[in-house]
Each structure stands twice: as structure tokens, then as C-alpha cells.
Length: 155
Image (cartoon, rainbow, N blue to C red):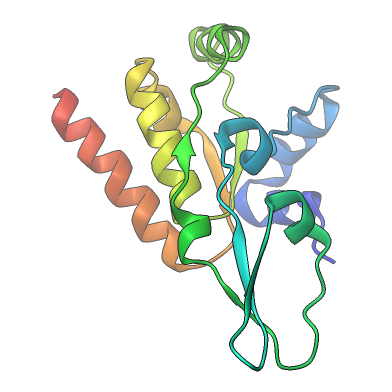
């Protein structure tokens, strides 16, 4: 199991990690339930080709049976939810206070949705100073290109 503290030691200097450890608050946002809403099912296809639909909550605990596979295509047709006014105010306060959170983004869709929200709420320059933990190497390109495109558009 990877610990967040181990990741922080790789990203930051020991002094920075020590400073971060002194802080008492950790804000964690579950992207799939908080920042994106979907009622589109995941399709389970059995070995005979029969299809059945399961929702996102069922998918979280679903175990494939021998010969089954998932069809994710429709599951990735998500509509980004808008950030709540409370979250927008909090993020803007952090930006004004030079507080830069660590964002955990688990998909290209999560990255693109977050970038759209940064742009909509004039938080792109702040976001560029934040730290991002990504779950796949290909996501780095999506994040960097997306941030750079937003900076170029705003220039």
C-alpha cells in the first residue's frame, strides 16, 4: 500500500513535508460522487454475450464471474457536476491565502472536468501551483496540456 506521506516525501523536500504534517486539516473529494454525477450504467457482458446493467454503486463492489467482462464505454459518458458555492468560496479563499492543496485525480475525465471548473471560477493560475497526484502516467500529459491550454487562452 502506498502512503500519502511517502508520496509527499518524493515530491517535496523534508522541510516542506514537515510543514505539511503540522497542518491539522485534510480535504478529500471523491471525484466520482462529489464532482461528477452519472446515472449511466456499466454493462456486464457474460461469456454468452448477454448484457446486464449495473449502476456505479453496484460497480464499486461488483466481482466479475468467470467469463464476464465490463463494457465501460457508456460509463465514461459523464456530465461534470458544478462545484458547490461553498467549495468555490473555499477554493477562492485558499487561492487568496496562497494555500495549495494536493489533488488526487483518477482519470482523464476527472482532470478535464477539474480544469473546466478552474477556468470557470478564475482559478487556473492557482491550480497551476497546486500539487496533483495522478493514478496513471498518461494522465500527466492530459493535465499539463490542459493547464497550458488554459493559461494560453487566458493570456
